[in-house]
Image 1 (cartoon, one colour):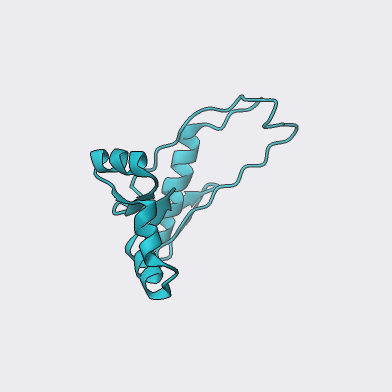
Image 2 (cartoon, helix red, strand yellow; image 1 turned 120 degrees about the vertical axis):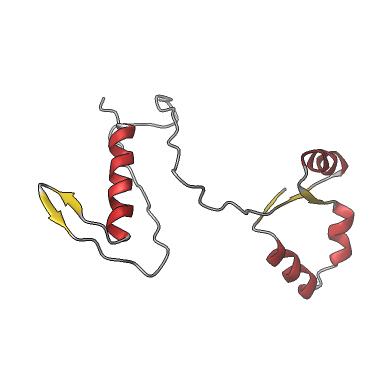
Length: 123
């Protein structure tokens, strides 16, 4: 079984980001000038595993820490009963109880305003 080296992955991500910021990058022994991008560039990694059944085999464990936080100001709202709202209150996260949701009463304007206020909801 071959393992994905985290140092190799980190170097590849660094090279991609350097190329997109306009720096010169060495690829295959050649130096290539980068192109400055005028938009936020994202990197998506897909790995194909042959002869691997995720239900049977639990071989993979590990993490890869990104150099920067993708979304530092993420806003969350917890939707739950009284116990969940109490837990959310203790850790300082916004929350809404079932009664608060019933007050919206399928009012589209209020629901849209609530959806725009938060990045994600946890039920």
